[in-house]
Amino acid sequence: MIMTTMAERITTKLEQALAPARLAVIDESHQHHGHAGWREGGETHFRVDIVSQAFAGKSRLERHRLVNAALAEELAGGVHALAIVARAPAEG
Image 1 (cartoon, one colour):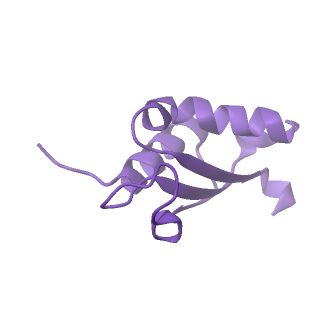
Image 2: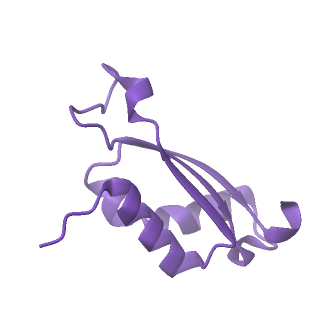
């Protein structure tokens, strides 16, 4: 069985669901040491910066819902916090 990091799982799922033009998944768990949801080994707090045509014409809330839906399994089982910056290509 091939083990993948949570960041790799997040990246793969977002690539499959939203075909991003640009995607950065940053594990910020180290910044939350001792805070709610933090676990030894990290992989609990992430920042996602994503640019996708799927976000064109959608509100910020709709964009976040698309990301959250793609990552439902991860959010239910290990990811405590997810900061999202979601833009359409025309927005940069």
